[in-house]
Length: 325
Image 1 (cartoon, helix red, strand yellow):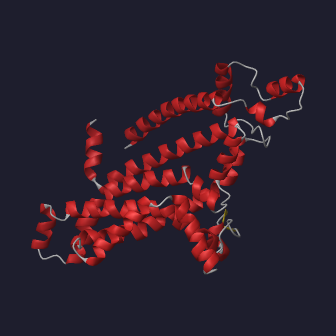
Image 2 (image 1 turned 30 degrees about the vertical axis):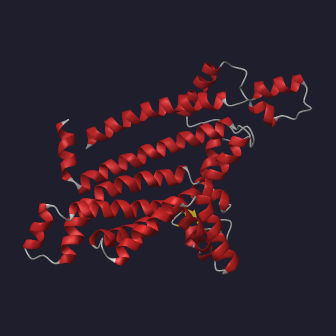
Image 3 (image 1 turned 90 degrees about the vertical axis):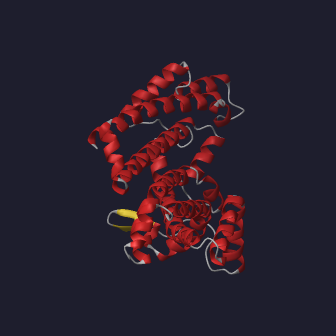
């Protein structure tokens, strides 16, 4: 396991270097931030001074080397717009995005897996078919339209839940979060449901397919032949063996929800990283864009590593195959 973690860490360093170069060059190529940030009435002297102050007067390769040197010291640059460290801006918004993503993933797990199990164990029943039809809507309906309909129904027509904002926050165990307050939960329910709908549909369909594949295998038939109860057969023999593909999908979807919750955060005015990155793209705030992408890459790498470790928990054959390498 130690060798595996070391190897994955080295791979992560390589991926980070490659991604940093791609992102840095990509952001450099899409436009000139000075043309957006500086007043149209500015003189050429003012423009030249702004370019020097932002460090844009150096060649692209030199700017990249400066960025790498600063990144090794934990400095991903200062925002052109806010004039403060980009990493600080992102970390200030990260708790809101993490709250939203974690609640959405938990919803998809606690709703998607039971419904998928039901549809897989009773594929011909009315309930099983209805679950699969309902999952199609989660895939098909646009995310922003789902959000608007949720606001219209639960906030405007019924008036049960607030439509915008994060709600009150409180501190517990040294962590400040809106999840510690009732007002925070009232504000997070609608955006979390909106963010979870697609993922829930995916979990339902994957769970059903895995159950249908596993239920006919020999070890399940043998467990039944031994006289084990249906609950034990399903809860132990079936459930454990369908978890590997589910862990993969849920892990990757958690990273995706954190990285790409932009639409939901925009619709519900949720003050997370997604809204910050959209605002930064509009003004070509390069340090914030690059810092955001680097943090997202780190999250994907970390979550993938956790998923691989969980593989070894659910399937010992993963440990054995890794040791043979």
